[in-house]
Amino acid sequence: MKKILLLLLFALFTNSFVFSQTLENGISLYEQGDYERAARILQQSDEPEAILFIGKIYFALNNYLLALHHLNQIPTTAESEIYQEALYTSALVHFQLDNYSRSLDVLKVLSDTRPSTSSTRAALTLYDQILGYLTLNQRRDVFRESVHDEVRLDILESSIGQVRYNSAVALLNLYKRSVINSDPLRLSRIETILEDSVSYTQRYNPNRVNQAPKGISYNIGVVLPEFEYDTPEYEIPQHLYFGIQLAVEEFNSENSDQKAFITYKNTNNSSSSADFIVNDLVWTENVDFIIGPLFSGVAKEFSNLAEEYQIPMLLPLANADSLDLYNDYVFQLNPSFATQGKVMANYAVNTLGYDTLGVIAEKGSLGDPAARAFVHEAQRNGGLVEYYFVEDLEELGYDIRDYTKFFTTDTLDSVAIVEAVYAPFTGTVAATLVESMLTDLEAMRSSISILGSEEWMNVNLEDRRLNETELYFTESFNVDTSTTNSQNFASSFRLRFNTQPNLFAYTGYDAAKVVLEILKRVKNPAYLRDALKDLNNYDGLSTRISFKGSHVNHEVRIRRMPRDSDLLEGELTIDDHQ
Image (cartoon, rainbow, N blue to C red; front, side, top):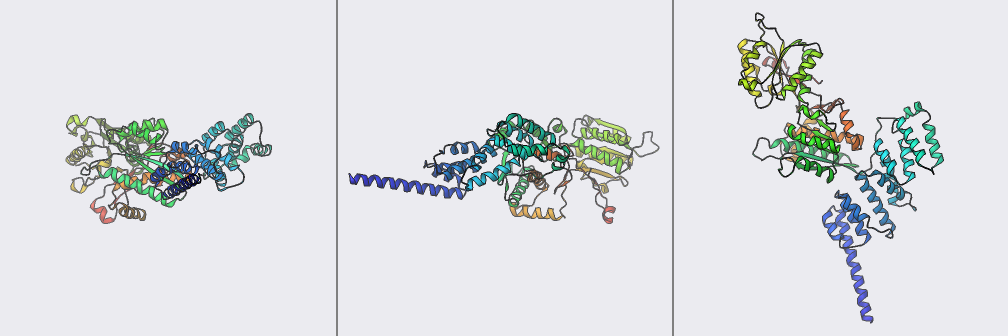
């Protein structure tokens, strides 16, 4: 009997030792960030501490629902420190799931627990941080959903000076109608503050610096196509992504209390539709915003889903005018063609002083809306559009002499004299149309000024018999490599990716940088859409950004094509930001 008892005691000691070693090894791997191996080892134990760390592992892996499943398995009879840490971690999980009422309810109970421990103190800090983080709508949701009247009172009190006067009064009235037992002293103090709307207005600061819980993370969805290495398109999305990645890495290195993470999706994957990609990013990855996709046609599919889920989406290159018609969450970094036409018209009339103008563009092309916007803006500023030709030029074999004959500067001709012609040629036929128009102007010895789209940037007037012709064109992106910021970026890019950055690398960097800087300021992603709309005069490396209350960047650079004489005098370009 004694022998059997000794064997049983030895077995119990051995099992206890094995479980202890298992728990110790699992926790060590967790602390090293080796989450998958840690989870496999910890799952061999049913100790509350092992279950706690399994929950913490899934939280670190952004698998929030599975994290809650394990955290909820820890019994109330577990050691108080373990149980309290499980509650605190579950509050963090609820916060990441945007379930703010549940998070605050858990933190309220935990912070009121006595005696004070590291978990209860952390809970009180996080509780206050979340109260300062919430938007007005989120405060309303918490007020309705919380199971604790104390949380409702804290929502009311923390709203003073954080929300507009009428919103604070409405919240106070709702609280008084909804709560029977309240703290009379705190309630009286709030009522006194709200008696005077003038003094409250002085207390209210709409530009306040918002709070955010320490360690908050932002999830970025990046949707770009992949191309074969030997194709000319290969480096476009590759360098865009590298630029985005560098901006994120800089953000993480500069901010100890905020982090950003990227989830990439390939839009050229035949098995992944726009619907599949966006749903996966929203439901599985819990993204806060999306950068991409690349092309306007694909962007249209994604934009509808971004609107449905109310996820801000920043398009780095797509510039179709149709994307902005009904989309409140889609922002175009690349100015639309209508915007380019509007800026060019404004520049032609108000800066260059042209008052009689002509327009020629391919019907149905991207230059079509640019032409229409040019006419509208020119006339609004007092200019006269004498000739407006938006025709099916392809049908004519791009022989456009029937239209260019009106752009003569011969005063003996019977046609009306125009000072400049706007020719927003785009797409694969742009080079053909540019060549045809220049040839016609040469034949007529015209000195009319040309106002063009970006496709005109490679024209060399010195090779033409157009000695007096001035050429101006719009440009959306350009990098001044002489600046310190650009040189620092290029150096960091080469060290990180072992290649020289192209223009798209700078653009990708600007796209991620501007969003991350806004998030650093507003903290709560729920503010991101409105903050983007209000963004003006942001200086990126490749472009300036001004949305001016809209969803399209309005910053368009106007460049003048230089001549050899200009180079001798040091005059290269004329830039204009409208």
